[in-house]
Image 1: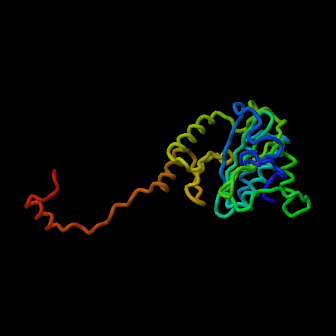
Image 2: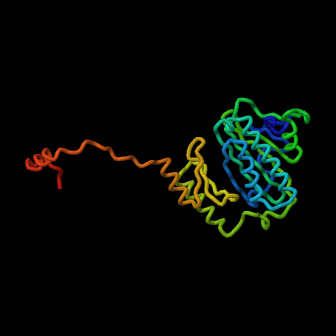
Image 3: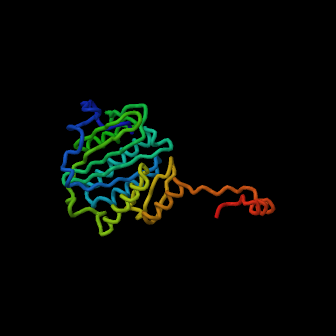
Length: 252
């Protein structure tokens, strides 16, 4: 696909937007949010689709969200540093009347733009994003960009239809908060499709554990390894005895 989602976008404080001003167009207080980080590999798109299916209830609007998010994720892999040993993140925000998908990448030299040719090699995927979305936009620079799209939602209501909201949601939030406090700056999340905890311990190093405390243990071992004691030469017993007799030994 090409490298963005909208043509002739007006500029607004660094954001490139189609369909209105930058930023969400719905009440943030009524939103459900999820965030997932993926390695910059083509095979991760399957995990992305399964994650979206686990978050949203089945309906035609969910199919649109999955299509848009897959295209934006593929764009990040093919056209940014995310696909060269990096990673990209996907934030999903579900309002009453729309779903906002925001894909953060590692940046690249080319500024995103829409390829308008529907018969071109990469044009149709982004035209699909354009057609399914009420608003799209991009912000950032060559160091990293966020490409977002807002897809109309006419499926089950967010307050009663979230597939991933359950009795363990509070525990998931607590686990995220604890990991964020102990390992600030380390992407960590709960995979609702895999029912496991995940984190990026370093460039290209993805670790997983069944619980948040176990993931914390893994991260502590990789980020703060315990220093091994030095193996110095064995002490000379005669010298130790002599030192003790002369009053030069260790204080008691």
